[in-house]
Length: 379
Image (cartoon, rainbow, N blue to C red; front, top):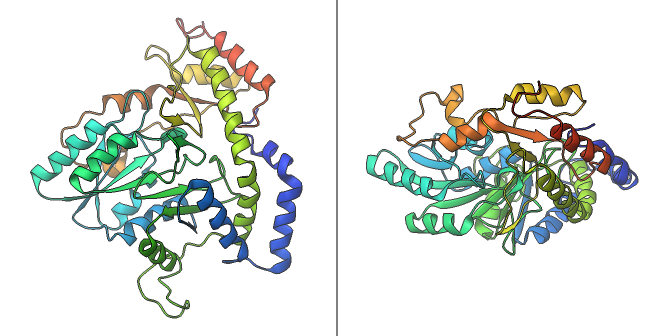
C-alpha cells in the first residue's frame, strides 16, 4: 500500500503526461518555455487572482514575497508554531525575526488570539517592527482568515498566505491562494497539485508586486536578462514541470472531490477511536494529508509499528513544533504557551491518503485500526 499513490495517478494520466514531456523534449523548450505562460494563466484563473508567478519551489515563492516587500533585519514575522520551517526560513535568511504563535485546537492553524497577543508583546518590547503574518493552510485546511484579517488590518501588517498544502481548498467562496494580501504555494510531488520535482508559485492582485517578483525570479532582470534592475535569485519553474502541471490541473477538481469522499469515510469509521480532522464549516479542505490525533495514553510508536506489521504506512506530520527545533533554541517566545501545538506534535499520525486510495485499501486501514487495542496498547 502506498502512503500517497502517485504511481496510480501517473497511470491514469500517463498518455497525456508523456505527450507533454515529449513535446518539451522535441522543442528543447526547457527554460521559461511557452507552457509557463499557459500554466500561469490557467492557475491564476483557478485560484481567482490576476497573477500567478511560477518559481523553483514553494520556499522560493515565500522568499520572493519577503524580498519584494523588503522584509529583513529589524522586522518581526509571525507564524504558527506548527508548520514546516520553510514558512519562515526565507525571512530569517533576510535577517527578519520569527515570532511563533499557538495553534487553534480545532483547525491546527494559527490561533488569532495568540497572534494578537504576540503582536502586542513585540510592540511593547519595542525592539522589532511587526511586518508580516504567515497564515498556513495546514494539512490543506484554510486558516480563519476573517479573524486574522481583522488583526492584520488593525496593526497594518502584511498578510501572507502559505498555501503550500492548500490548492484546491476554499474559504467561503474564495480559493486558497487568494486569501491573503499575497500568497504562495508549492508543487512538491506530494501536494494536492504536485509536479515531478520541485516547483512553486506566488499569487497576487498587485501589478507592481507581480512585476517585481517576475524580475526577481530571474536575477532581477529588466527588459533582458543582461539588464538587471534589482538583486534577485535564480528560481524558474522548468517548462517540463509546467507541462506536467497543466495536465494535472485538469484533473484537480475531480481529485479534490475524491479526497472529500475518502476523508468522510475515515471520519465516520474512526471518530470513536481517534480525533479525526474537524469538519470545515467555513469552506473546503484540500486534505493534503489525513492526520488523526491519538489519545495521550496511546503509545504512538507502538501504534505505528502495529500498522507497519500489517503493511500499512503512516507518518508523523510534524514531530516538532518550530520552538523545539535546535536552530530556534534561543528564540524569544514572549512567554507564549504552546500546549496545543505540543499536544498535536506528540499525538498526530498521518494515515494513507490520496485520491487513488482504493476502497479495499481504505477498508483494510479502518479494520486494522479497529482491531487495535487502544486501552492496552495492542496486547
